[in-house]
Length: 245
Image (cartoon, rainbow, N blue to C red; front, side):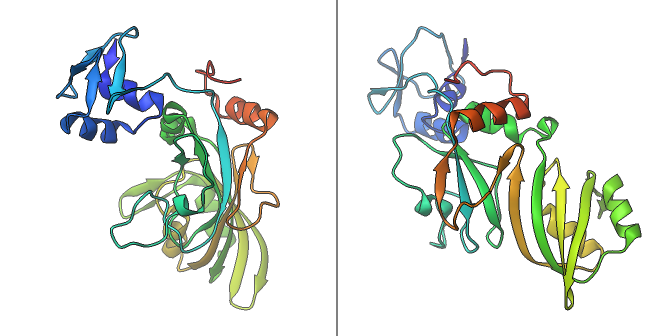
């Protein structure tokens, strides 16, 4: 038995928050009976429907990767009518959920899945999937700065975990480096570099766990092969793999 909003979210039909709104709007039924409160529990055997259409159990786990361009928001809708990553997606007969945001001015590897459960699992800080970024920034980092980042730093009372930094080259007043981290907090790399008087002017995610951006062209989307998918799930230590093919 579980809450109805969780059941809907795990089906991939809507997020938990969206499910609660659907319930409030009187669009959800259980075994044909209208449900008006998200504080409602359903048995596995009961049929949950949205707008009269029964939702199924979560489908076989699928994942797609995108090479996100700059100037796109990682969201479905924007009140200011700015471009979103969902405008770049091909027509796929699945509800696609992004895994980990990239902000408006960041680019590179962005993942999507049809599994709400898997997406939520990867958002947990304890999951600790390694992300790798290629970063160009104005300014320079000393060896002392890099050692501090590898131990983790506290900025304005906010703790950032260990970040591995490998300097690649300098071009004029700019430097290129590879940043590897496990947490991926909001604007983490930009904020820690600002702390050391450096300013990011280009940020490209090139790896998320075992998945690499590779040669995927800018703005393109590609489904992971079965081998890539299994390797990624194993890499993330996701134990509920019953939906894998």
